Image 1 (cartoon, rainbow, N blue to C red):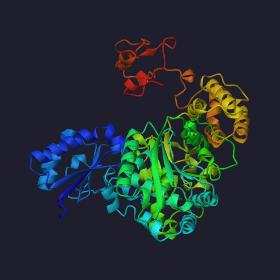
Image 2 (cartoon, rainbow, N blue to C red; image 1 turned 90 degrees about the vertical axis):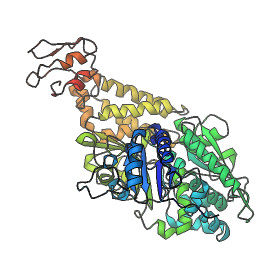
Image 3 (cartoon, rainbow, N blue to C red; image 1 turned 90 degrees about the horizontal axis):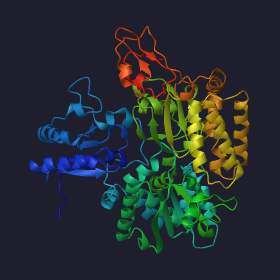
Image 4 (cartoon, rainbow, N blue to C red; image 1 turned 135 degrees about the horizontal axis):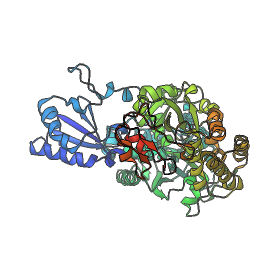
Length: 597
């Protein structure tokens, strides 16, 4: 039977961000409009995984032209069908940015957010239906697995991964090939392959997006790893808060089994490998490898001492390889194109590309993939399009709660493992949260310390007690109770927690405090000595007043105040009663003349 040829494909992003904005409602209206006009046999609507440009969701891209439409609604669909599909006239009001010249039609590749990226892990994003194994196969899916099983020995697979220079993308950056080689040398069976999809960092959504958009790439990478280390069983540990990712991975596993790409005697080679999904309960500490394995075993997720390392004694005490989602998604491309192709990008010690989630006070929030070594400035201002509202950049927080803050003076730092560590931050799994001038660095350090206190497993004293003491001291500072010597105390305590904690999470939990002390010490001094928060975030240090020279005597602030703390009479400046003011900032938001100080 000849394949049906469509004159146009409309690709609808159905990642979590777009779905939460109503993507499925848009799709239903679009399909109805096409059917009503008799176009449903000529135009195909395809649901894809995350397109990456989350700030513009819901997103649709019309091919063959490659026209990108953002913030689409169900009510926009009649216009799109009438103008673009029927008359061939794209709809400018739905463009990312309307072109200066009306005859110039900006395509997806012309948008800097997309044009400046290099896609390898995300090569299929927004292009294929993640719930269709046929579409993955059409994009060279499972060719790498076939090559690894029929043309390469396990030793050759490991050698290729080692030569590529691929380092684990989950945080520590341990060389992937060395980990696989270590596991292979042990002759105790069974062995296990684990994919860590327990993405707990605030502001991070890389693993979720990859699992939602390209689950077969991860499964293929795990199967290749199984062949390399002589394992026949794999587990994907995915946090339960990712229901769409879990659904699509389970569907991908079922499809791969039906096609003989998972299970017994894959490609007739005699190699068996199967995979299973385990939903995690959401404990942040289960992102640590040994805690994750205890959770898989049905035990409480608490890290254990090393050695022995997981490659020797991991899940159920057996040799185990654990890598994260992005690491496994790189493997098929390395097998298919070779180590030299992979390490042609990146720096001397950090090869390939890295996927980042870009969030916070940046215009272009989304998922980006860039070569290792690119500057942080390029990510924030070229791809991210700068800071929202034209505000000033203050810091970038990298590495999640265990990461650190990079100030404006270090914006040109190359994004690689060693360079970021030198700034006091870490690569982590790839979350980048942008902070503008309205961010208080002391309060930010308090926020992340509070998060780590809540998520500590409590096994060791430095993490369990040390972080609590650190949090109490930070709370005193933001409440105006800070004293001389507090900064020195925090530095000493942070170093003690770093050196004495039991696991990697505890050892890095003080990073937010230590990095803000390193780069923003003046803000700590202002909080302690001047009882002042320059960002107007710490309420206990804020006093509100009306600037009578700026006040236009309109009374809007009085109407906005929920507690009656503002008095105002016609043709008179407003006044704020500090005894009644709850510092809710309603008056600041209401005043159009910036008269509230």
